Image 1 (cartoon, rainbow, N blue to C red):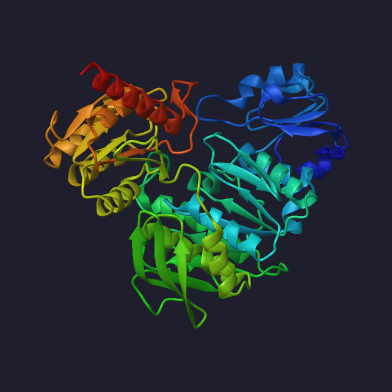
Image 2 (cartoon, one colour):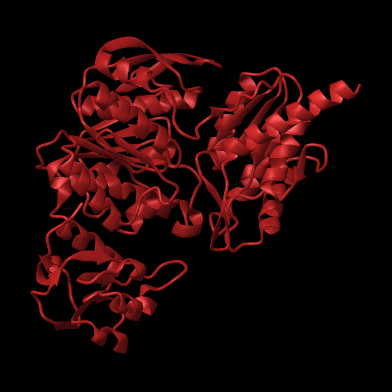
Amino acid sequence: MTTDPCPLDELLVDLALGRRTGARELPITSVCYDSRHALPGSLFVALRGGYTDGHAHLSDARARGAIAALVERWGSDVDQFEAAAQVEDTRAALAQVSARFYRNPGNALGIVGVTGTDGKTTTTFMLDAILRQAGLRTGMIGTVSVRIGDEITEHDTRQTTPESLEIQHLLAEMRQASVDWAILEATSHGLALHRLDTCPFDVGVVTNITHEHLDFHGSLDAYRRAKARLLEAVDAGAGRRYPRGVVLNGDDAGAMAIERYAGTQRVLHFSLKDAGADIAGHDTVVQRSGTHFKLRLDGREMAVRLTLIGEYNVANALAAAGAAHILGIDTPTIVAGLEALESVPGRLARIDAGQHFSVFVDYAHTPDSLDKTMTLLRSLSDGRLIVVFGSAGERDREKRPVQGAVAARLADLSVFTSEDPRFEDPDAIIDEIARGALDAGAREGVDFVRCENRRDAVQIAIQAARPGDVVLLAGKGHEQCIIYGAERHPWDEARVARELLESLDTARANGMRAE
């Protein structure tokens, strides 16, 4: 979409500016923070990132046509622009600038934010299905895809919550497509790094808050505090024309710990344990074909048949139902929407090549999600459980031995492998996982093995499987690459599993003919 030029002064209004030079009315035709995207007429915003500093690319942005710069640090390379301004935090400023450049698109649609350690993607897909069942036009920004009305684009950016510039651009496209409600996955990184500052949230949903991202936040309290910014945003948006409220997991201590940040807003609790909760689920039956439960909401009780597997998906369904209830959608429509959702990309995706054992690809990558997924699969099979997983490099190191301990407790055989090591030593990451397994009593070579190459690791698991076993390939899910250093190596877990299953079947068939 194209946007009319905007005077620089309008983009910088209300920002606390330090040094400033150049024409205030300079017409800005685009905004960027990556110098490679600079065009004639651009405003370049220099962000400090984990791997690079935008201030080092000011000359490149200017050479590509950028006419203005927004910086934290003023140097001689700033003077080459026709106009420039200095702020304390360019990332926070980018959120304000982006919203103004796209003419505050969030004002034209309702916005639901979904946060939590696990379950964000499934909950957003469920809520999207409910809203569409109710005849509403939806938008969605999340881990695996972006929806704008009827158009869905899958992606693998590894940013569940994009930078504020991309978010405002997508919201503007949703406005143009006459979207009624946008559903955004709101990560703790996105909340803490100002990516969501100018999104006027009307409804906030918290699925749970467990152990994750402590490498970035430093402590569990800081992690929870970042999540709480979503509830503060809902409270701050009072006065908009949309329904408003907060939905919390009443069974989760982390979610309940931030309830006070909802301020004066309506708070609904969902629970699988408390029949008196605002949204309650009970009589859950989990089968290989799906999950059945009874939903108690707004004085009614209705049976629900999910195609998704697992009690934790009942919790996700309750979270989505709570948000839909705040939006005024009736219970029968909520149930119909939940039942209409057939699948979520990369979430317990079954890979069937005719083998006599089960293979699932799932995104589970936290200790809690691994525990829940492995417990579920054990309950659905009388055979052994074989699991393959790793732990992301340059991310929360404390969870690695906990992951290993979970595997030692629940799996019959674990294969510890790579999962986006980035600039860390892949074998050192695997060692940390293995230490947790060893401390929990697992025996190397019997209960677990190490295999850095992920394709080889999947092959080990598949070759070890016997009729009736379950193989879980965890941690990659929908993702389409493995990151080594700064390079993305193509990777499709489901495709690799299918290829290995088919080659295994061929090898066995050839073996039978040889006999």
